[in-house]
Length: 292
Image (cartoon, rainbow, N blue to C red; front, side, top):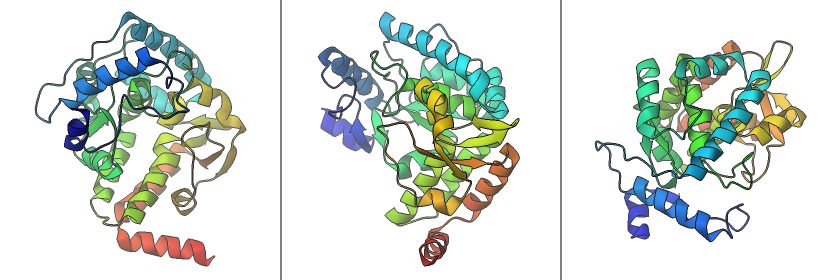
């Protein structure tokens, strides 16, 4: 059944299938829970009511632990725009919110809704849905042995990281611009370039603010391990071409980050890039990069 469900939702990595270096790889009970939650998501089809995930008491407790640890670090490490989103969205801290709860909080603010997927989906599908204000989200949660970090998107990352971003109108506009941009590209290489820019901005972006370095990226802000480590990274100037050609490893804390000089500068530069990005722009930008 899982293989059929994978195909139906264009899933690249089904929730119950873990890499050998995943913290939960040898935990059969955890893998079984992941499979249950992934199957709940896999049965969903657009237009249907979003199904609730049957979270356990232990999973709710893990959410509470991570919420408290992240909030403490957000106060000193998150940029002001993200903190505005946290205040506007007011996510619950006492339980893992169902995706319908997240939508009920978020949609009145920026129009975005959450839809479940059973695992990692293709970049084209994920980014394409953003154009319509739809965020595809996993529902399973990270392994309890490493609450500070997850090597792939879990519900803490999807909701605490991304939903708080999406509650900021200017960030929500960037997400939609990514969705528009992916519709204009037709080669895998151009999609990969866009995906890397997304990674080093929306996922792992930092900005200079108040005389220091602050995070706005969902990958940093949903991991208290990343929040403790990001200031020690190799922080480079904001450069779309450098980001689009910089490789990264999802299994470890990010050693290279790109800093915008301000949130306003970030929005201006990133929106400018996204508004004109297509296959010709990809060729022009990468040709310039490798020619230099």
